[in-house]
Image (cartoon, rainbow, N blue to C red; front, side, top):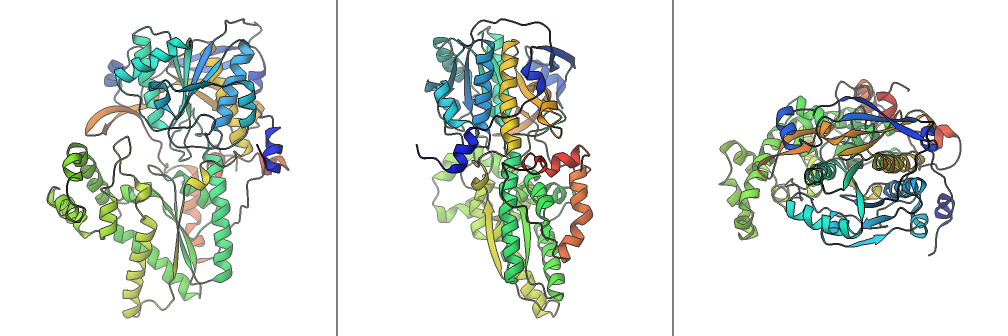
Length: 549
């Protein structure tokens, strides 16, 4: 295999990890836990795994000898930088415990478990993928593990390979599946542990003990580099407004982090839009007002960051989408049978009066995008809704009207962007390389301790890696009940941007200045070598949250 100079250099990088993981360890148990909401209902659904304590690994003076343990691993959902290092950490951890232990990877996500597609991950294979981006070591998939039939089918291959533990690397939905699977296997005494690892570049799988989902750091650095490049071009040509949509379906963490890193003229935060009960026209008016003010200073250019899931946070649109999701979940076959040219009218006559009026008012292409196939979890695929194009067109229409009324005298030309897949498989930053390896190693130790239904946790991550704290949290403590496919189901509660949190307050404090002045920052590419403060720097979100700015 031909490799670039950087690939060769990164292959030799040895990830840093918590100092305690270099030693003999034992578990320190905290207090029992409860779910974030719906306690009684969730305790009934998860009688075997609910209420378990938070765990922390501490140094022990005892050396423990354990039998060989075969472990399976699944990469689930969208890619995120660092996944290969999680697997490397698991491999090194189980081999340190007993060199006869084996690691098996299930091919193309949860479907590999169900369909018995797998391969043994040997040292030669693992070494080829250390510190690399992507999930191509075994591939990923979006199949859901949610039925007893699937669980039993998976158990057949786990028994055949003598696998005693399964690590599911994924986001909130994937780790919800891990929680349900752990409960089922425990309830039937299957003898298989299930451990989760927090992955998603969206950054919405976190809490006080899961300080960051892996991949968020790298993806935001990649996007911020390109945004900075665009802003340099923008400030050079001085004739375009760039509407930049960023990944983040259910939360605006990426937009917020990139906003803090690059200081654009406008950074929309979906959660704020919802709290302020803003309409689509309110958002358009706010943007147009800033465009007009900059034009008064002769600045007919600027940058706007837009969260991917914005449209779902506009209260009126959120109600429409919720009704559409429920309706299509029950009537998808009938809807698919209708001619495309007739579908808009069909939907209009099937919705409530309020939502029918909103739907009818939308541009044809946006209305069509709202009825496209749902994702495996029953949600509208917001990445296919061209929100950046919609806003650019609506702002232009408003400015044209203002120009006729003598309220605006500038020039307005736009360029639209969507940054998504560009950040998902980048070579992980040092932070993600270290963090992911530590998560995988921690997962191996949770397995050795016989735990199930836990998520690997590595915290204190604004300190040097040697000072990080490793442990585990019960996945049930992150659950609540939500409506999916028209039914109430247990799911991990998404972590949204906290409008009272330090990161958002920093943005809010500065955005009026950034709107009118050209205050751009140009972060440049990810640095893997050089001073510690450059190559190991965590996200600004983490630093503001931990008060270390």
